[in-house]
View 1: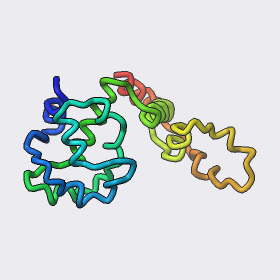
View 2: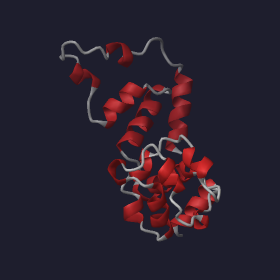
View 3: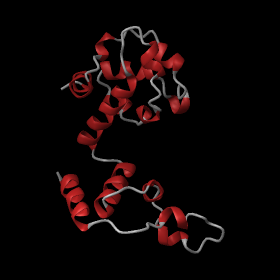
Length: 160
């Protein structure tokens, strides 16, 4: 199935309506960062250029919806970006951040953003203990305990 059809199926966004006016790009605060141009990404979706689409640029979308407000055909790029993330994960598997998120959620039944970020970067909390002046201990420490039945339920949902 083409990327455009998958995006439509997941998000309800019909990217075939795009006529490349570039209003989305002109209003995007992330435009130009690491080669991210929303209208070019839509064009790559239409041409079914999976390698170009999945190089990760769409993850730079800040979900501010400025593009959605200015799009003359009513496309909502943040919804397209979410759909692309879903398609990429199904086709190529989860990336480092997604794996760290799933791991953190499965182990604790809640997510500590600092732990997820450090884990995605390959940094283990225990390895940081020897660094002087590091004030991450408060962020990394969890107070209280999670009820075991919640942790098991989250693990069950994550396993699918």
